[in-house]
Image (cartoon, rainbow, N blue to C red):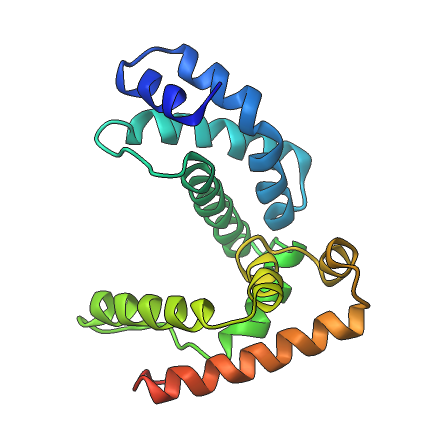
Length: 186
């Protein structure tokens, strides 16, 4: 079923919207959750919660790209689970590794201006990503959005692991310089 038809089902509050979403996007959402959680049971639960999240968000939200909308819900839910595990001294998966790689550049805002700082940071990162070569952008997003392992990225693009590591390091270094040039404190 086409995405716009699935979205229409959500807007009509037709429960078959969830079934259609599951048919089309279950594997995609599961992959995102599993890369972050590294646990089948938690990933399944996260995907189920994704469908509930989509049901609760539509309406009023009417996503332009359903796949991205669902991916974002899944990712956010999985990250919440990781935070809960971390609080209980559990965790793991690619999330921790990828986060360690990127966190050195961006300090967590801790004041009343944090919302504005987050928006400026998001705009700066989007601008940076828009200027990357397609392969660089895809590799960067695979690692830091989907939390794919270095080996998975290398296999997907036909690169060696060392090439992926070097691409990511160089891209992080360029991002760091870009953020500095935008006046974003790092």
